Image (cartoon, rainbow, N blue to C red; front, side, top):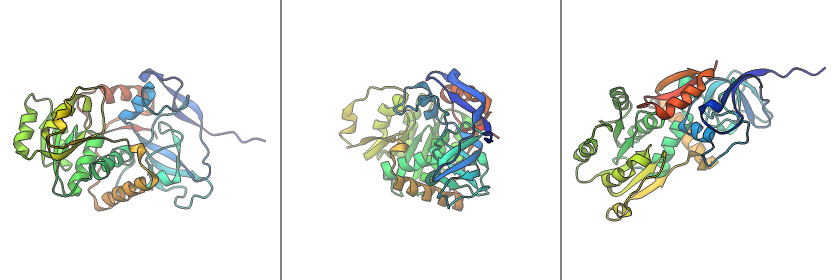
Amino acid sequence: MATRQKLMRAIRVFEFGGPEVLKFQSDVAVPIPKDHQVLIKVHACGVNPVDTYIRSGTYSRKPLLPYTPGCDVAGVVEAVGENVSAFKKGDRVFTTNTVSGGYAEYAIAADDTVYTLPEKLDFQQGAAIGVPYFTAYRALLHSARVKAGESVLVHGASGGVGIAACQIARAYGLKVLGTAGTEEGQNIVLQNGAHEVFNHREVNYIDKIKKSVGEKGIDVIIEMLANVNLSNDLNLLSYGGRVIVVGSRGSIEINPRDTMAKETSIIGVALYSSTKEEFQQFAAAVQAGMEIGWLRPVIGSQYPLEKVAQAHKNIIHSSGATGKMILLVS
C-alpha cells in the first residue's frame, strides 16, 4: 500500500504578473530531499525586492512555472538526503538559496548553502541573513575592495542590505555614512554602524554630505536606487572612487565625463554571480560576525504567509524601509 505524501501550505505562482499572481495553497506536496540536500521546516522567510522582479517576469532569471518564490529561510532541519553529514534532524539552520522555494512550510536546499543558526539569533533574524548580508559583503569586499580607513556612503541604509552594509563596513574599519528617508530609519542606521546619517528626502542633503566629507569626497558608495541617485553619486566620489550598484528600478541619464577627471568606476553587483568558493568566503565572514556579535539583523515588517501579496506591494511602494521584511511561516 502506497504511503500518502505529506502536504503543506505554500505560495505558488502559475503565471508572471503583479502581486495577485501569488496563490496561497494548502495542498502542496512536501518535497523530499535528494542527494546532498536538506529539508528545512521553515519558521521564517525573508522577502527581498528581487522576489518581486522575478514574480513580475522582468528579471534576467525566470523560474519554470509554476514555482514557489523565496530563497532566504530559517528553521529546523526536518530530514536530510543521502551523503549529508554536516546536518541532522533538529538542527537550527538558515540558507541563502532554496531549491524548492522559501514561501512554504518546508523547503529544500543544497547542503552547501545551509548554515548553522546560533542560538543568540531567532528565526526571523536567521531569515534576514542570506541575501542582505551576502550581497553587502560581496559589494564591499569583493566588488569595491574596501580598505580600512576608507569612507563609504550607504544610500538607502535602513533596509535589509543597507543595515548589513553598515554593520560590515563598521566592523572592517571604514568611516560609514548612511542615508534614510524617515526619522525612524535614520535612528536605525546610526544604531547599526553609521557614524553619520542624512535624510535623502531633504532638498539639500547632498550639500550636507559634501560638507561632511570635505574636498576629498567619498571612496565608496553602496547604491540601492541607482535610477534616482547615480548622477549625484558620481559628483560625491573621491579620486578613484567606486559606486557599487546593488539596486536600480529603471534608467537614468548620466554624463560619462563625471567619471573621467577622478577616474571613478561604476560597478554592478549580482549575488548569484558568486562562485561556490566566494559563497564559502562570504559565509565564513558572516559566521564570524555572528560569533563576535557585530552581525545583528534588524527585523522590519512581518506578515503571515497568506498576506504575501501585501508584503510584495509594500516592499516596493512603502515609504522608507526600516529593517528586513519577513514572512512568518510556522
